[in-house]
Image 1 (tube, rainbow, N blue to C red):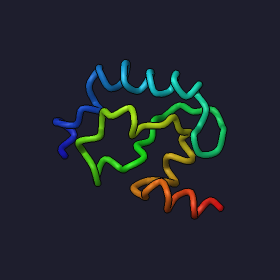
Image 2 (tube, one colour):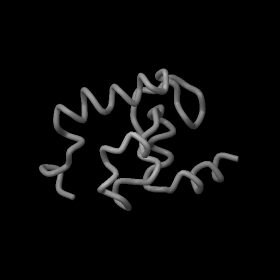
Image 3 (cartoon, rainbow, N blue to C red):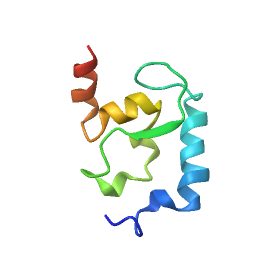
Length: 82
């Protein structure tokens, strides 16, 4: 998906989707419990671009966990943290 066509760069994503997910999860990282300031896609966007705006596929996440998870599935990432 090109950056130009990526819905994550438009206002609806930044202000509504992202902030709704962060508020829903009380600004707490789903993975480590730290303060969250990012949104992670449980199933990476590269594997399921149709889920990019799915609330069921998004969790609040701290920058550290989001960077470490990268393109991994949630299961693989959590197994690597154990």
